[in-house]
Image 1: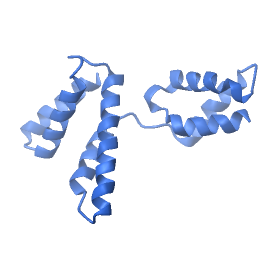
Image 2: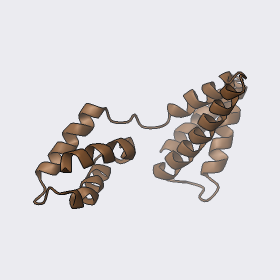
Image 3: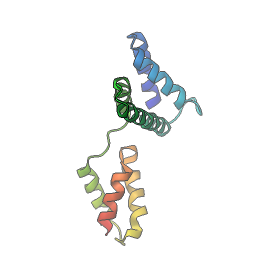
Image 4: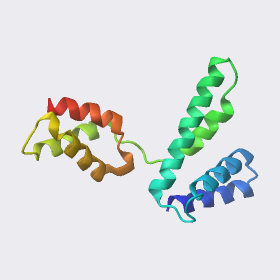
Length: 140
């Protein structure tokens, strides 16, 4: 499970005295286990995405003020390592074409069916925003 990997990495950071990683992963574990002692990977990934979104906003704010955002970038790099790699555009197009080919009705009304099939196939690796635009184009 993802939470176990994060806990093991937090322990390794403690042993190596890496304060940045230790503090970040400790905060992440606390947030991810707030509702459940053993959260599933989807819940942990949701927490990771929330942390990353917050870090991206902070980086943007710091850069707009001309300040150094090196620590925040380092934290974002650490967190990115725990998320599944998103599908490439080519792989996404191939998958969309396969799903659309199996549809009896190839109209924009089938968008929900295609998106549901893609989510089922690829789970967290699916970039819904990119997929939505490609599906819309494929069904037009």
